[in-house]
Structure formats: C-alpha cells, structure tokens
Amino acid sequence: MKRPVLWFTRGLVVLVGLFLLVQLWFFVQVVNYKFRPPGETAFMSYRLSGLREKNPAAQIQYRWVPYAKISVHLKRALIAAEDARFVEHEGFDWDGIQLAMDKNWKRGKTVAGGSTITQQLAKNLFLSPAKSYTRKAEEALITLMMEMVLDKERILELYLNVIEWGSGVFGAEAAAQRYFKESAAQLSAEQAARLAAMAPNPRFYERNPNAPGLLKKIGIIHERMNSAELP
Image (cartoon, rainbow, N blue to C red):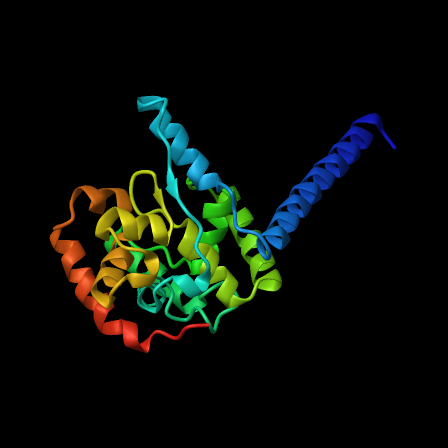
C-alpha cells in the first residue's frame, strides 16, 4: 500500500473511532438520564456563559420536579403547542417536517422548524444552539437514542424540566415561580397556555408579555389543550 493511501486509511480509522466514542458517550448520558435528573444541560451552560459576560455573579434558575408534580395543564399545553403527535411518533414527525418545509418555502425564509419534543430535548441536553448540518445530524442520532432508551413519559418529564422559559429561567418549576409565584403543580390551564406560547422565543416574550402574537397563540393553544394526548 502506498504511503499516502496508508495515511488516509489510518486517518479515516481514527476519525471513525472518535465518532463512535462520541456517540458512545452520548448514549451513556442518555441511559444515565433514564434514572437521574440533569445537573446542568449544555444549553443552560451556554446561556449562563452569556449572562456572566454581563454579570460575573449571574446564576440560572433551575429546580427539578418529578412528573407527578407538574400540572397536567402544562403537559397538555406543551404537546398541543410543540408536538401534537408526540405519543405516536418515534422521534421524528415527518408530516410536521414536510409542513414546515412547505411553509418556509412559501415565505422564502425559515418560519417553522418541525422539530419534535424529543429533538428539542436532544438539543437542549447536549448541543449548542448553533445551526449547522453537523449539529442537526448529531441531534437526529441522539433523538434515536432517547426514543430507544427512554419512554415517552420520561422524555416529557425531562423536557418540562430543562426547557428555557426566560433569561436564566429553566424548567417548569422556575417558570411557574418566575411568572406566577406558584409551583409547577398549581398552574392553571390559562397559565399553562401562556408558558407554552412563550416556549419558541421565551426571552423575547419575557420582555414583551403583551405582544399581540403571543396573546393570539395563547388562545389557540388553550383551545387545543383538551385534545392533546399524554403519555
């Protein structure tokens, strides 16, 4: 074998080996989250770094609460708003992705994503918010791992606890305290619909709680909540 070909082959083997090791690390973390709550997610770390550039003493608000201590209204609201087929799909909502692509094509820009709750959880737990094909590919692999290892209730429990709901505000308990001075278990249907409506752009809606688009979304989500299927 000629030397350049040998170097290429060895380099390829090393790259494949590193790739597999990274995937193994992600898989081990997913298995760990089947039994334990996250201490801090990649997205929390990213946001905290940004906050500490302005205030070195900044902290995030995050407190894990079990699934049973989160209002059923919030569970229904998030599924209605983010992923209506959550209990049916295996990580990817292909119909939702197609609808998002059609909408983006008609608008000439990205206005819809089509990501499922599982995909969003994969990004929040492990990845950066940077948009790239590499990140989307890794997100897809982690999504498959989570759907294989975790049941739907655990996926939703994790998502409810780590989703961003404002500047430095993460999870249902911190959001309930921040906006309503209540626990996550006590959220009403109206409060849950507001939090679900905020989820796509929480820091903007935190600053603009009466934005017309937000108020419209709250009404739509509230109407759809009763038909949302829980795991």
